[in-house]
Image 1 (cartoon, one colour):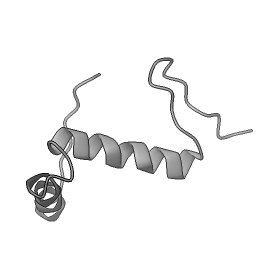
Image 2: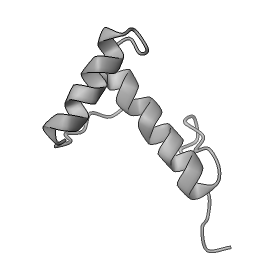
Image 3: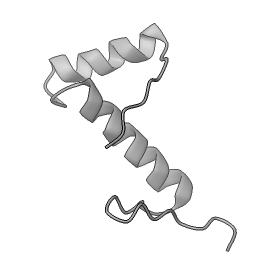
Image 4: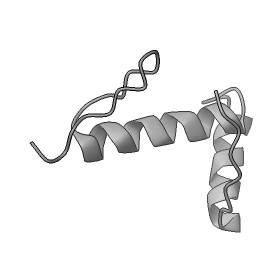
Length: 60
């Protein structure tokens, strides 16, 4: 995994913290990973394979 820096509005961070406090997710990082994964699935119409870093081709 790679480390990135993301700037989030306070409201987003508060929501993430609430999910962690309510034990929906173990920590902020996992919450954000799940959110990004779900966004990519919805927007790209598929799942990026972690092992191969394969990204679906949107032009075909």
